[in-house]
Length: 227
Image (cartoon, rainbow, N blue to C red; front, side):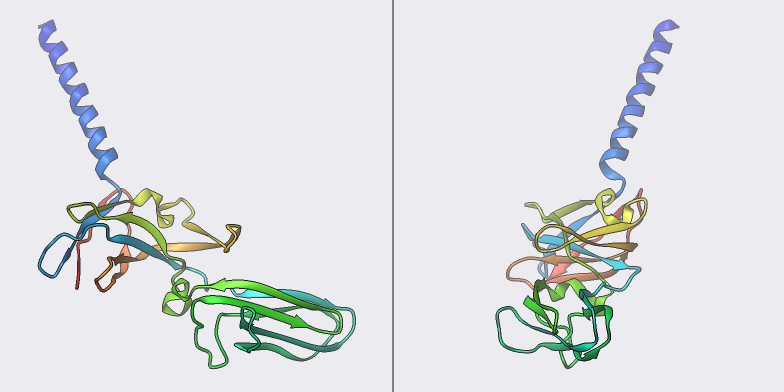
């Protein structure tokens, strides 16, 4: 009888260990297979996500102070170019603290192309230039979605697997930290559990799955076909 109890205890411990292993390996993953139109697996496809933000994309800005009223001009140009992408201020401005802001749009109110830009500010007291890099893939859907984040790559069978717990939308406060070109913290976003999933493979048209809901604690299967 003692041997039977011992066998049962060992068996229960083994089943418990297997259960824990399964949970640890499989739960909270976004995974699937990427193939071409002939159902051939695509190798080394890169997968990215972008997050749906609860806030609008912050603007780039320059703060300045005037001890007395005077003419102020602030404008954006391509980096080291004598041109004008957008005029931000061109007027007499009163004394005090002010901010010149740019939302990455040109004079026609269209998003500018990915490039380096300079924001200039001149007044009787100030003459400065701020260099910045703008990537228009960061403002998908008119600024609703934020930075692309590289998350996975397909293996030799075209299979990918993403640890959902490492996505910003699974964090306790649903926060996502973006960084500037120098690697310094720039903005913090609150993001929803809806994401855009992108698959990119050289020689094929990129594929996007919009408004994919991420549910922590579950396996989410999403196959993609690239043409």
